[in-house]
Image (cartoon, rainbow, N blue to C red; front, top):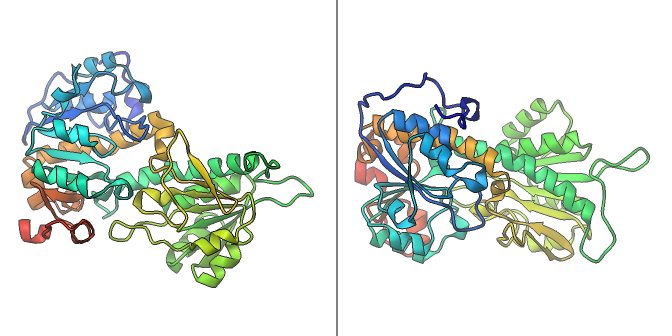
Length: 403
């Protein structure tokens, strides 16, 4: 094994290294391109995950420079057994394309067709032309954030939510302290003796919300968590030792809390691919001047009527004197940590596709993988996508049958 690889980098290290093993399933040819869109710093497979896949008989092509922004050089991927491709076009000829962000129009144009695309979907950033271009190439698309694990949960969404929650609390603290541009400086999140701490309102009680609450409380903020699910709120209160206030989402309660909030973090889970929009523009307008909104859920539509997609280059905007942060790939800011977390999930997923006999058999017999399917050989398999984008669609149950 290369001196550059450390098995501590990935949790997917359950076997000793060996020169080669025979695979019982299908041999996969996987292309990992360099990310070009949305200032993306992550890569879907780190060298350690590549090494395991290669040992299991798969061919991995990595575009030159693909791992640099996450902290890995080409030689580390080469030492792990990957082939380094100088041209992006070679990557997009592989049977399976594995990337973090959805492909750009130019990247779709390079695809040979009848391939499998494994990536995040980031529905808020998609339009009709994206799905039409993939459909014309007869692509099978699997959205990583929708693939389920043995506990019927999205392992990728959980991992990314844990990271995003931590980031949201820290970003909120920094933005609140910086204050609005050209105006008086802001507040310290935790306060000091004789000065009350800032009020942090977290909308949602899932993984990202819990992660944000832990960090915000650790920094000394007064935290209120709201959700529509009383069981989630009870669990959050128990896990955080009663250190937060929990309330059900109701318009009157939400208005009151937002009117006093310094930082508001939107962390609701999507329903049928779209995050419930629970905060109206009127509610935002009534928030304190110089307060901060962090919309973790922006990649699925966002929790706030005033949310608009931003980027790492220009991450914030001001509306109604409230600072908004709405970067859909916020975890890209910590590319190394996020890439390792993704590799821990995507590496075993790819091996599972092989063990099942390939993509086709996996979609027939593995409902957890099928949960991520949104396009099968060019046909949309999600009703809400077909209706929203006015494209033909069918049910995956009709295509593959129920188990």
